[in-house]
Length: 379
Image (cartoon, rainbow, N blue to C red; front, side):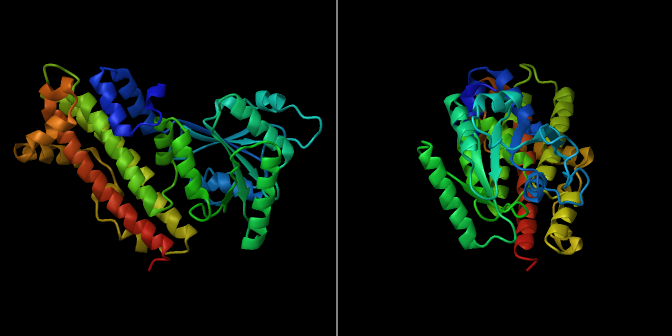
């Protein structure tokens, strides 16, 4: 993905690319967001806390299919990989810990484990950061890799006081080795919504190229109400891009072809939204199990049929309804939203935008109710 996306508002960036006729960039962005192509490495001792973290990042519990086993099936110095069961292009890579040997060459460790191939790296620890891990971090910075983060993994035995002491000691290690703005994130592996993980996500959003940051957001489980809002906005940017491509596909619109394309991409987007917002049956059941709630109590909160099942019939129905409503649509709104080259083909654009934005609003509202009930213990 072109660096032009980094640090800019997503939808404004996509608009600029459309205005500049960089359709390949927009198509690539749409595809990246739909498949969530992300490689995330987790470095550290292979134990219960690290396994729990890798499962939680994929929304899994220890008993779920595809979860990381408590005992790694690979040799201690080998890499193991875990795809996301619902977003297969989001992959977690289990890397061995940085050795505590001396002398130590960080380049050797990084080359062996292809450190720079990952979009982001979590350097996990449970006690105090080891100096060699800091050397790897500094080497990564020297290679312009900003997306390496230190995670202090908490356990049920840790107290607020013990965690604070570990964090303080680790920050001192970072400072003593020349890290100018040291950061350590306290993370509870089995409950990512607690402690510093939301702050870590905010930091990653600023550090990663924007499309990658949004792709990661869409692949992660919906942990908080804030994440629901962020995902909703990301999907609306995705819808705008897909609708723009559809609306501007041809200088001479062909209704039947446009309709087929619209419904096909709409089904992909809404299926992705259903899984990303965690409103599908399997995700709701898993959330209920993790929070010790009855699945039926969370499922009954869904009022949008697309939260339960995304079907081509329902999508076509919504697109057709949006077509009928076009007569009342604000022409000024369409003029503002459309890129210049696509304004002659605005009917397809407007119908898709209206239908899918409405669907996303409904599905996000369901997600908000489910997350609020789960975090509040069903109250």
